[in-house]
Length: 62
Image 1 (cartoon, helix red, strand yellow):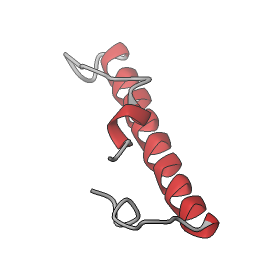
Image 2: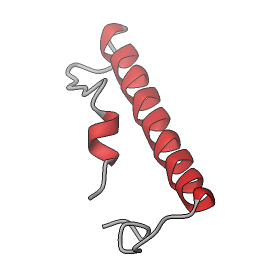
Image 3: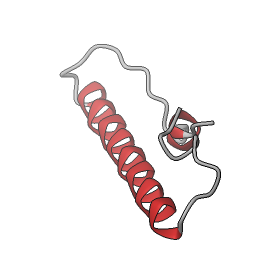
Protein backbone atom coordinates (compact mmCIF):
# COMPACT_ATOMS: atom_id res chain seq x y z
CA UNK A 1 0.00 0.00 0.00
CA UNK A 2 1.24 3.47 -0.84
CA UNK A 3 2.51 5.65 1.96
CA UNK A 4 0.03 8.32 0.83
CA UNK A 5 -2.95 5.95 0.72
CA UNK A 6 -2.78 5.59 4.49
CA UNK A 7 -3.31 9.32 5.06
CA UNK A 8 -6.79 10.75 5.48
CA UNK A 9 -6.09 13.74 3.25
CA UNK A 10 -3.65 14.17 0.40
CA UNK A 11 -2.01 17.50 -0.28
CA UNK A 12 -1.52 18.64 -3.86
CA UNK A 13 2.26 18.33 -3.52
CA UNK A 14 1.95 14.74 -2.25
CA UNK A 15 -0.43 13.91 -5.09
CA UNK A 16 1.89 15.49 -7.64
CA UNK A 17 4.90 13.61 -6.27
CA UNK A 18 3.09 10.26 -6.38
CA UNK A 19 1.61 10.90 -9.85
CA UNK A 20 5.04 11.76 -11.26
CA UNK A 21 6.55 8.63 -9.69
CA UNK A 22 3.79 6.51 -11.24
CA UNK A 23 4.42 8.16 -14.63
CA UNK A 24 8.15 7.38 -14.37
CA UNK A 25 7.37 3.73 -13.61
CA UNK A 26 4.97 3.52 -16.58
CA UNK A 27 7.58 5.07 -18.90
CA UNK A 28 10.29 2.66 -17.74
CA UNK A 29 7.92 -0.28 -18.20
CA UNK A 30 7.02 0.81 -21.72
CA UNK A 31 10.67 1.35 -22.63
CA UNK A 32 11.57 -2.11 -21.34
CA UNK A 33 8.82 -3.62 -23.48
CA UNK A 34 10.07 -1.78 -26.56
CA UNK A 35 13.64 -2.95 -25.97
CA UNK A 36 12.45 -6.53 -25.44
CA UNK A 37 10.34 -6.48 -28.58
CA UNK A 38 13.30 -5.14 -30.57
CA UNK A 39 15.47 -8.00 -29.27
CA UNK A 40 12.88 -10.57 -30.37
CA UNK A 41 12.27 -9.00 -33.79
CA UNK A 42 15.99 -8.72 -34.57
CA UNK A 43 16.58 -12.35 -33.59
CA UNK A 44 18.74 -11.67 -30.54
CA UNK A 45 16.07 -13.20 -28.31
CA UNK A 46 14.00 -16.26 -29.19
CA UNK A 47 10.87 -15.48 -27.22
CA UNK A 48 9.18 -12.57 -25.43
CA UNK A 49 5.96 -11.81 -23.61
CA UNK A 50 5.14 -8.13 -23.30
CA UNK A 51 2.39 -6.30 -21.45
CA UNK A 52 2.26 -2.99 -23.26
CA UNK A 53 -0.60 -0.78 -22.18
CA UNK A 54 -0.98 -2.37 -18.76
CA UNK A 55 1.50 -0.13 -16.95
CA UNK A 56 -1.11 2.03 -15.24
CA UNK A 57 -3.01 -1.01 -13.93
CA UNK A 58 0.27 -2.43 -12.62
CA UNK A 59 1.20 0.70 -10.69
CA UNK A 60 -2.28 1.50 -9.37
CA UNK A 61 -2.19 1.09 -5.61
CA UNK A 62 -5.17 0.92 -3.30
